[in-house]
Image (cartoon, rainbow, N blue to C red):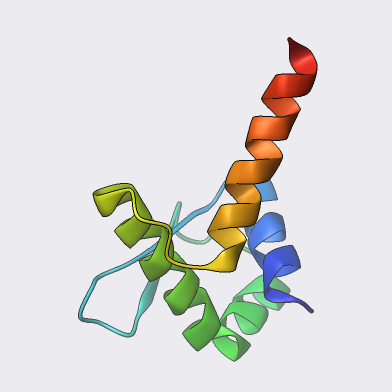
Length: 85
């Protein structure tokens, strides 16, 4: 499974992922809300998920785009808003 799809499925479950800056550990809430299959996928892709969470946190903190994915997200959101006006 692609990590983007995994994160989408986690969000669809109403679960929020987080990590501490200096810790290679994923935390999610509400606890116990994820099916075992998604927990297994998170474990398999843990390093990439941690990287994405840290990039997003750094972007929120500084406003500086950290990766291509964030640039594409901004463009998609901008174009979606532009199409509504």
